[in-house]
Image 1 (cartoon, helix red, strand yellow):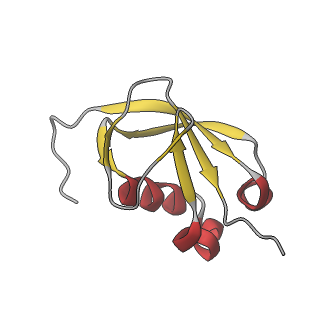
Image 2: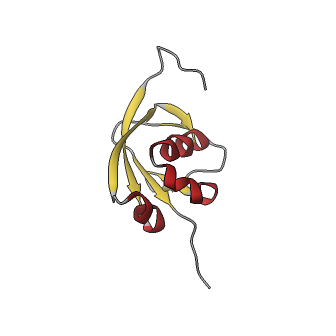
Amino acid sequence: MEKSEHREFVEVNLLFFAKSREIVGQKSILFELPKITTRNLIIDSITKKFPDLQQISKNILLSLNEEYLDQDCSVTLKAGDELAVIPPLSGG
């Protein structure tokens, strides 16, 4: 990913649930991300900040303002958006 001087960043509220909350040790944080980004780049940014999340990164679900993000979607973030990190669901 090339960085541009013109790239805008926004601060979002990053929420952690279940196993991701356990790994990170926090319920939520303010997190800066590029205004225009993709689901995969968001995951990369989160796992760079929290390397221990790498163990579940392939199965993380992300939701933006309570809407799930598709695997390879592109999004435009706004300051104050809620981005939820939802780990793989287990069950039996």
